[in-house]
Amino acid sequence: MLGGTFDPIHHGHLRSAIELREALGLDHVRLIPCHQPPHREAPGVSSEERLAMLEVAIAGEPGLMADDRELFREGPSYSADTLASLRAEYGPQARLVMAIGHDAFLKLGEWHAAERLFDDAHVVVIERPDHDAPLPPALEVLIAGREVETVQALMARPGGQLLRLSLPTRMAISATFVRERLALGDSVRYLLPETVIRHIEAHDLYRPQSE
Image (cartoon, rainbow, N blue to C red):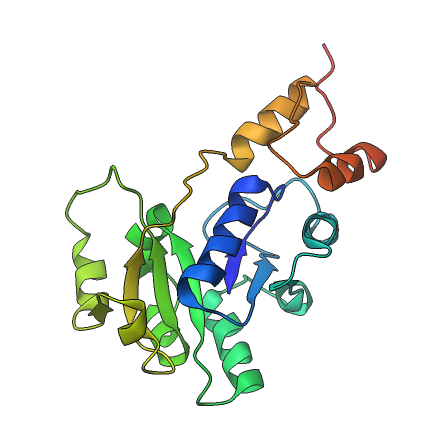
């Protein structure tokens, strides 16, 4: 599971998903658009449009799947609830993984029902090489005794453990940067798949600001 607002989906998201699948030996990666983000303002583009952009971005890419389950759930899109639904779908022995970026990891101790995340899945942190600050106390407590050093150790169990993982490619693309360029009418070519750019243009999303 790789969640996010995907507002819009960009090459950084997509490359991370592919490299996660390869590094962990996963059958597939489910990209799950967040419907109502619990910790930030709602995106300016609808959940349905963000899902549509995700679908055109990964069309034909083996191992990447768009998952719309959060769009049909009322209230905030809590990851604990999403993982519980995936666990119910796949059964108790399936090895499930939730991947998050380093910035999100630092706030994991504040997430809703954070302990439940480990009841249903492993957590894999996409490392940021330039960060070496101490972890927040709540996070230290949450992950105590859970961290493993290798993919093999992680995959020995269905869930409950944490692995920090450095991916081969670190594409410094942010959705905020993409939205800013779109709002100014600047080029976003090579930041997004061409299929996503065409969808944005066809549906008049992130329109340039008027002077």
